[in-house]
Structures are given as structure tokens and as C-alpha cells.
Image 1 (cartoon, rainbow, N blue to C red):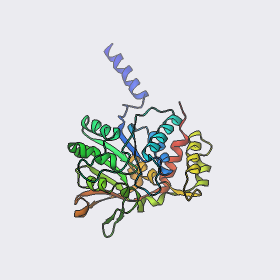
Image 2 (image 1 turned 45 degrees about the horizontal axis):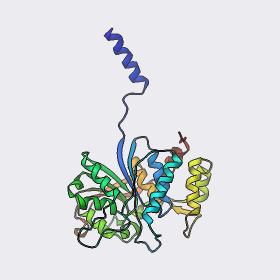
Image 3 (image 1 turned 90 degrees about the vertical axis):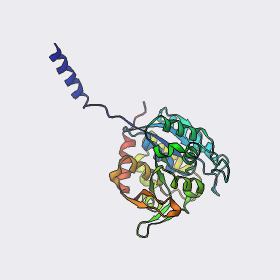
Image 4 (image 1 turned 135 degrees about the horizontal axis):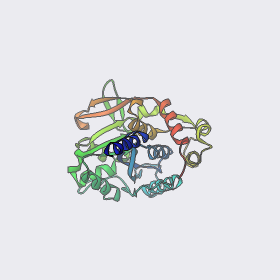
Length: 295
């Protein structure tokens, strides 16, 4: 009898392809209202079967000259709209309305920051993918410094010269909250950074994107955002954030280098991505999106 039961469970195990792999739990922090690329990146990570997005945080871009009033709220609304379009249930949290403060308690106390703190306290390690300003993550560490060593932060920002190892911080995301970046560089949080001079390989035309995904319901939603977003270019864009998402899911699509940063940038080893395979990233994106059917 026991032998028959063992045989049955063995067949059952094999019929389902072996044990179910545990999903990696992550938080995603996005300034979705700022540009077009965030929505494409969020769609890709939400469709990844090996990952569970446990929180989708809204980020501001209030420091920008091109910002709108309540930029974080705009990001929060777009996050919820995307989840509705995909018929997915993911907890969404409002983040900081602006950059960290100049003195005293410099943290922006937001639902997003406290969700990072809560999850970090409940686990041995927490991964956070940040597509915009670092305000929410840095504020969480400022409020509870002991969580820093538990955090693994993936971020798009800075410019790195890989020959001279000079790191510059004059691109958009660092400028949205310079203190937040400084604070994270000086913290114990593990950092993985894709510089903008590397992510710039992610240029693609509207026509190519339309040909690939324009007939898919989710593709149409993303393409509407492409066309309706008010800026100076609609024919071609750089989907920066999609590169960050892709290299997290598929590290083989990028080449990384651990760089010892200078004393004014933390003086510690940080993983920088120096090359990406943009063609492979886009092919993965197209295949994943086209295979998606709303439940």
C-alpha cells in the first residue's frame, strides 16, 4: 500500500514538472507620471512569473522644471490604472510628495517609506527596484537605519566613466533628490546601478513598437501613453527603465562591473552595469507581453 502511494505521489510530482519555485518578493518604486518608459517597465515586471511585486510605490519628480503639481499623485494614479488594465491586484502606496528635507528630520514620512520599513523588518533581505528619485528608500533608511543592511537596491541613474571610474550625478534621477542619493551611497544598502549612459542603448521608434505590440490590448494601453504624454518627441523614445527591469530578471542580458566608488560617493563597492543587450531586452519584452491574456 505504501509503495503504491509513493508511486502515485512520484507521478504527481513529475506531472507538474517538479517542485514549485518560490517567487522572489520585491518592491517597485516608480515615478510613473514623469516619462513614458515607466509603464512599459512596470508591465514587464508585473508579468514576470519568477517575481512577486508586493508593493508598487509612487515616486515624485517635483524638483524638475517640467514637473506638474502633485507629481507623486500622478504616478500613483497611473500605477493603479495599469493594474486595472492588467486585472492585477498589487498593493499601491503613495510616496514622498517632494525631495527629502534640508535639515533636522530629513525623511519624507510616507506610506511607501513605511511599507519598505515594514517588509524589511519581516525578512532577512528585501529587494527594491527604483525607477526614479531615491526619496522613498532613503527616507525609510533615515527613519530606521538598522534596515539598511537588509536592502538590495536596483536603480537607474548617474553617469559612469568605466575607464576613469568617475561617477557624475547630473542626470535626471539624481537631481530629483541629491541628498537621497548621497545618503544611500553612504549607507550599508547593497546597490546595483545602471547608469544612463548605458541605458541610452534602449532607443526605439514608435512605429517599431506599434508593429510589435499595437494589436494587443495591453500594448494599446502603453502606446496611448506614448502618444498622449506631452513632451518634445513621439517618433522615438528611450525606454530607460525597461533596461533596469530586464537586467534584474535576466542578468545575462547585461555585463556588470563592481566599482570601488570615490570617498565622496560612499567609498565602497557598488555594482554598475556597463553594457546591455538592448535587442535581447526588447525581444523578451515583446514575447512576454504578447503571451499575456487578462484573466
